[in-house]
Structures are given as structure tokens and as C-alpha cells.
Figure (cartoon, helix red, strand yellow):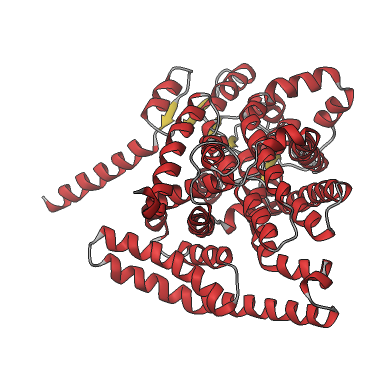
Length: 564
């Protein structure tokens, strides 16, 4: 009977096995993505036993690509990128260039064509959005300064990949004009036509889609039907992706990305993300399963050195390039290690690129298997690399005089200027963190002419604060040196706005050691964290949820008092 139901059989086998192996991977402290890829290997044509319908799996994977890119657009934040642009933009560009060059050099050494080598190199240069976000979130680093740098870095890579998906066919025509049947004239014509098509599509989305899509969602939401709203979001993502390809000749990935980007600016962005999440997750699973079906396990036996070389480019080459640039930008070693190791893996964009290269006839069959093998190994090792960051940092500092010099080098932003007024050196407020909460507190203090010194890891924010006439030092407040430079010994109040509860205790211990009488106020994410912080000697812990409830209760009582 299953012969007449290939779609149902493929869905049942892919989702069922992905569930089982994803669960096993999670129990082994590995990303579930590893289990999804292995599920594809099991039901793929390169392993014995049941073989799912590859063509149907590829079509389902296309839907997965659309929804993945739609999700990237929904979560794309200009503000997050701008906050770390001075390190994320050059960092991502350098790392991608190094990884692309290393991967392309390997492919050329193996006898591949220049076009295939280029695709292969780019596929090794971009990290997985899914893996990075989940890895940072599981370790409580997503809201940290190091986490924000890594996410900003990833945003730059995602944007670069969107452009690559558009221009890759044109680049392949340039590298292999004979195979593609074009010369210089046709190449320029194709390039101009492609750029005009992309520009036309972007203009339509920004001018028309920005108004039409929120208007449509508004009217759908007024019906009160949750399923209609969800259907509208999914239909928008898939419909615009298809329309971009059919009308403008643009990739479905770019179309879906701009659909999410336009919706993100509307008031329904969070609801659209929440309602579409189950569909995006389900089809993302099918996408990873379909990629696993392309993997030939024999490549591990027949080409072990090639697999090792690919893994080395992903884990070692990319990491060294990223860490070197972060250190060159005068960031500390822990930032360099966190950023470089979190990006030392590849994922969904790599699969999309290598699949596109194979469809264009420039990437040989073993190329897909090598990329999937590199992805499986790097994703599996990524949690271990992140866990080893702190021991590795201590080991490097203990054994490397150069590393110690880099950590203690003179930094004009690490100390207050000699011209700083005395009011910022005694009985002042030390404000740790300059995120949304810290920024608001700084505004309130400035309005009341209360002297304060900001301690912030983001060097760009520190420079902006100084340019605005505020006192600020660059550094991690967990490090006693940063608090010393903020003159904590003479301060009257310490405000800790960091979202990471684990960082609060060492900051409090240092502050109490240097200034036993200082008053300390910190924030907590929830009631449980507030209870934990209450036992470490804080003068007050602010729980945002309780603060909102208290404010509403006070407003209600005041209103009732007036009414009486």
C-alpha cells in the first residue's frame, strides 16, 4: 500500500525517525540537529534497508528552506547588528574570506573546478543559526555581551549568504562560461538583469509589502480566528517566496527572507513568529533529514583525510581567524574564545549552498557528503568546545606571556581619562551594563544630574558614552580591574543591570571587598533568581514581573482612591 502513498510514507519515516534520533542526541547532550541528520542517513539511498522517496524529500526540503529564511527575516534586528557593527562586520567578512579561501584551496587541490571550489569554500564559511542560538541560550550567554557579538556576527553572515544565493549562478557563469554557454557580454547582461530583478523585488516588498502585509494581518486578526492568522502567515511566507521566483527570477530563499523582514516591522511580528514556529520547526526537521539523505557514510572510509581536512577548516581555520580579529580589536581573550568557538560549526546555509552547487552541476557528489560530514562532526563537538572555553582561557594565560600581555595591554577605554571631574570619582553611582535597562537608568540619572560611571563590555557603546560626555570604562565587571577603574572604592551605589545571574555574585564580592559600605541593587529575571540573589548581601533585588505587578497595583489603588 505504501507504493501508492509515497508522500505519507516519507513524512512518517522522516518525522518518526527524526523524533527518535533527535531525542537520543539530546540525551547525549548533543544538538537534536545531529539526530535529524542521522535520520536522513538511515532512510537515505546510501544505507541498507528502507529508502524514502528522495524527490519528495527534496520538495519538502524546499518548503523548509522557505520557512527557515522566513524565520531569519522575522528575527533579523538592525539594532542588534548596529550595536556590535564595528567588530561583527569586519569579523564576519574576514572569517568568511579565510574559510572560503581554505575550503576552495582544498577543493582545487582535489581537482575540482574553480566554480565548485568556490561553492565548497563558501559552504564551509557560514555557521548555523539554529546551532549557535540554541548553544548560547543553553549556557545563558544569549543576552551577554559576548553572545550579542556572536549573534551580530551571525547576522552579517546570514545577510552575506542571502546575497550569495542570488549572485551564485552569475558567479558560476563567470567561472565556467563555456560550460554555462556564455561569454563576457552575456555575463554582464546576466549580472545586470539579476541585480535589476533583485532591486525590483526589494522595491516592491519595501514599498508595497510593508503596507499591504501588516494591513492584511490586521484584518485577519480582527476575525479572532487563530487558525486563519497562522494560515495567513504561512501562506505569506510560501506565496511571496514562490512569487519572487516566478515573477522576478529571485531565489525562494530571498523571497521568504524579505517576507519575514517586512513582517518584522509590523505590530504582529511577535505573534507571527510564535504562530509559525511549529511549522518552521517541523519543515526545518524535514530539511535536515533530506540533507542527511544526501550523505554517503562511505565517505568516512573512502576519504577520511578529506573529511579531516574539512573539519579542520571549520573548527580550526574559522576559529583562529575569528579569535585573531577579536583580539586585534582589543577585546579580552574570553570574548575571542566565546565568539570563535560558537561559530566553529556549519549548518543550514551550508547545505543550501552545496545543494545549489550540485543542482548547477559544479559540485561533485562527494562534495555534499563532505559538507554533511563536516557539519555532523562540528555540530557534535560544538557543545564540548563551548564548555572548554574557561579552562582553555586559564590554560592559555598560565602558559603564554603573549596572552597575558594582550589581556593587560594599555587600553584608552579601560580607564577613566585623567581629565575626569572629581564628582565621578567619589560618592558616585557605578552602573554595570548598558543594555535596555542600563540605558534607561543612565537617562534618569543624567536628567537628575547624578554622577555615574558606566562599566560596559561593548567598546562601541563606551566610546559613544564618552562622546556624549558621560563617564564610562570598557571591561567585564566580573574582573576586579574593571570595577577598580570605575572607582568602586569611593562609590555610594552600585547598580547591576546584567541579565546573567551567575555574574552578579563575583561582582558583589569584589564590590564589598573594595567598599564594604556600598549599597548594591541588582535585577533578576524571575522569582527564582530573585530568591537566589537575595542571599548574597544585596540591598535590593528587582524582579521585573513583580515590579510590573506592583506598579499596576499602585496605579489601581490610586485610581480607586480618586474614585472614592
